Structure formats: structure tokens, C-alpha cells
Amino acid sequence: MVVASLGVDFSGLNNAKMRVLLALAAVLSAVRGAALDRGTPGSHVQLYPANGQQNVSPDAQLKLTFSSRPEVGSSGKINVYDSEEKKLVDTLDLSIPFSPSPYGNGSTKANYTDTTKYQTNIIGGLDFYFYPIIVRNNTATIYLHNNKLTYGRTYLIEIEPGVLNPAEGSFSGFTPGQPWRFSTKARGPRDGATKVVVAADGSGDFNTVQGAIDWAPANPTKRTTIYIKNGNYEELVFWQYKTNLVIRGQDREKTIVGYPNNSAFNPPNRQGPSRRPAFSFRGTSDLQLSGFTINNYYPGQAEALLVDGVRTILDHMTLNGAGDALTTYGTIYVADSKLTGTGDTVLGYGSVYWLRSRIESFGAVTWTRTVQGIHGNVFVDSTIVGLEGDSTLARLPDNSGGVMDNWPYAEMVLINTRTGGITAEGWGPVQGAPFDSSHVAFWEFNTTDLQGRPIDMSQRLNISRQLTLPRDKKILAEYENPANILGGWRPVVLKA
Image (spheres, one colour):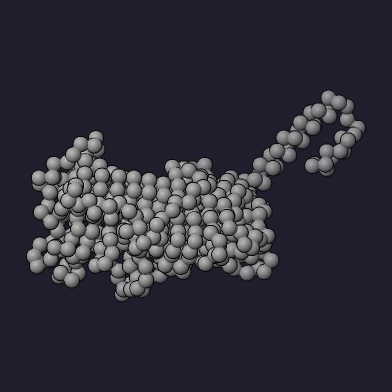
């Protein structure tokens, strides 16, 4: 008999001696294997994709899970090579700062004289500052630059020492001689596909929401559906100029898309759309978001969602942001949804019809900025709660620049709405003279407390109006019909 792992011939030994030597051989083999494991970069770290894994989606985020929480270093590089072409396809350099305010707590004003290079990713055609690595618990997620990997390729990942530093033990990274290797799927969804699946564990067509949105056709002849499986998708999401799209979560509470972002982390550009939301889009039409949660994890001016499009439906959605938690442009229908924010919770430029929905707000619930000729925020059979007991329904403060900079046609109408934690004045503050508030429509009909009891209107702000029957029957009929608020559009919520 020959024990091949040690290369020794034991055929002349008796059984007792054989058993001892075989046991010794097993021990030596195990020791040798353990030594090899300790010497292999990353061998004590759980990897996703696994080293050598096949059929990986090109949009996959790279995850390393340690036995203790790792810290992100301030230097070192992560390099990604195409194995076949021996070509560098992406680099993350940890010596580059993440943002002018990497913790989201600095100035919210743009400094156009700042020439510092920051970590930048192009998402949906727009440049965002971003975190190349985010650590949650013991897992470090590496965010490569979007759309650098493609189908049908093998990639080698090199991580220099110091990029990640676990609290216990050490991590020497991956070297050119021993890289982290995986191969992507041969191809993406079939031509003409109308539904794709996003799954963080790699079991779907895409690993990320943004990856699926980037794939979605701009103007499909048939509706495209992106189905998101339960999971936590920590990513910045942005896209432009797409139509006829449904994005649907598996479970409203268990499908979570979010990111830490605000106007300090991503201050304004000289031109172009806002970069501070966690999830945003512009130039869209006929879009429906259903059945998932969107979070913005930073304080300040930090939208969970910014909507800029026509005929947008938000159905059974949960939105958690900070200031300006939902910013609206265009025409929007919100049904059976919940929004939480920390003041000016709805920054409203658009026409929005709210049905059976709930807003919880620290501070003013809305800053409605309706222009002449369109409707604003209309709430029907909904609930509005001030979380500190001193919120107002809407405000129109002096906007620092005179009357023309304010919003004399601002509109917010409540019909059969339950409220709690709202001041007795209900509305305000509203800028005084010379501001002309005669066209402001801050109206209410049958506003109650959370138990359904009528609210005392005797102290309501004098520019607000209480609608009554039969006097305002015609107005109420107009405002209860979504088509009248949304420019003739009659929204139909598409079910799963």
C-alpha cells in the first residue's frame, strides 16, 4: 500500500504499525494543508463571489466577511484585471478622499473653487461621489465603478495590504501571484426579455437594482418589469429618460434599497440634477414603483426618493429620508404608501395625488412650491403625523430674495385626512407682506384627529380655508378625482 500524499511505501509493515503510520500521515497531511491555508491570501475570509466562482453577474458587488469588523484603510489599491486580455479594467485607490464631507456633516453648499479629486462613480450618466468600500458588521462590500465588468470574462482581483484591516488578525490582501478570481455569466437576459430578477445573493439576472435599470431599454414596446427579491441593496440608484417600467419588490418590509447620501456628501453641481437622494430619476414616463422600502441613511437635506417624471405611480412603498425626504416634479400618484422625514418632508414642485397614505414628519410636513396652472399636493383618506407635536402641514417662509422667489400659487388640500401632532394653527409660517398670499390654496375638508374626531379649526392660520358642504360640493368633487389633479391622467396601479 502506498500513501500517495507522503510518497512512502508501507506495504511491508504489519497492521498495527500500519495504523499508527497512517494516523501520523493523516496528521501531517492536515498540518500541511492548514499551513497552506494560512499562507493563501484571503483564505480566512469568506468571499463573494467565491474564489473561482463561475456565472457571476457583471454588476456583482464584491464582499469580504471577516471574523471581526474590518476598518477601511486610507491607502492602497484594489485592481481588477481581465484575465484573458491581461488588461487593467478598474482601480479603486483608497488614498483618494470619498467626498468633501465623507460623513455627510459638512457644508451643504457647493465650493466651485475646490479642485480636489474625490472618489467618483458615473451612475445613470451622472457623476456621484461614492464610497468604494462600505463596512456593515463584519462584512466589507467593495463597489467597483459601474459597468466596468462585462459578460463572458474572467477577472482577477488584487487587493493591496492596508486596504482592509480586521480588528482581529491580519489581512494581507490578494497578490498578483495569488489573486481573487471569478468568471462572469456568458450572456445577459435574452433579447426582448420583459422581466428580470434582481437578487443580492446572485440567484437572479442581476445583483443590483442599478444593474437591472442600466439594462432596461429606454423606450420598450412592451412594459419592462424589474423584480427585486428580498434583501438589503445598499447602492446609489439613478437613471434618466426611460419609460414603461415597473420596479417591484418581493416584500415591502424585506426588500430594502438605500444609501448614505445628502447635500454635504454630494453637494450641488453647477448644473444638472440633484445628487443628494439615495434613489432618484428624471425625464421618465409611465413608471411604477411597488412594494419595497427606500432609505437614506444620512441626516440633513437627504431625500429617500426624488421623482422627476410624468405619470409616476408609488404603490405600497415605504420611504425613509431626512430633510426633503421626498422631492416631487411632474405628475405622481401615491397609494397605500408611507413617508417619514425630518422637515419639509415633501419638497413639492409636482402635482401629487395621495390616497390612503401616511406621512410622519419632524417639523413642517411640506414645503409646497406649486407654480401657477398646476395642482400641488392633494391628500385623500390619508394620515399626517407630526412626530414632535409641533409640526405644521405646510410652510411658505421668506425665500431670501423677494416675492418672485416665493410660491404664491402653492397648493395643498386635505380631504378626509386624519392628523396628529399638528399645531392648532395648522399651517405656516407663511411669508408676510409684500408677499401676496391670495392665491395660496391651503384647504381642508373633514380633518380629524387620529381617532377620527373633528379638529378644532378656530385657531387655523388666517390664509387657510375650511371647505364645507354643500357650499364646496363642486370643489370636493373635482379634488377627489385624480385625473383632475394630474392633468387628465387616470392612474391604474398594475398588480403583480
